[in-house]
Length: 167
Image (cartoon, rainbow, N blue to C red; front, top):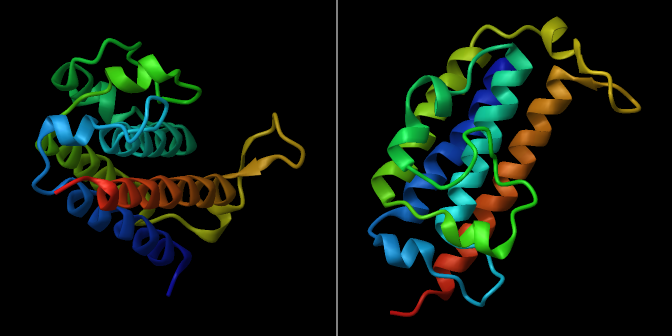
């Protein structure tokens, strides 16, 4: 297995989990918060997808699917178009509402783009420093693993919240 194949498999597992976690839920159930401060399934899925879209695009110097393919307009959220959800207040979390079709569709588009960008990535490209604001500087490979780790945690949180939903 090449590093590219390994990364595609990792992100593919998130790509399988997202449609499953939103499947059959209404927009209201997706927006349900188990308490006043908790993240909803809609917010968790939107956020993990936004982070993947933003960070993978940045790692490869390409446009985000959110902006380039009109997903920002389709969602119509009252947020800055570049917002990824990092540091959101409870009110901002509550503002992220979407149906399962948009959530799953946006994630599928981001995964397709991620898979395309990773298809031919070489070990040398994974070792390339893409962010020198950190000590040690961040390589493309480290950034991709970080994104996958964040996605996996947020998907697990969404699955947990789904398990708590009544009925």
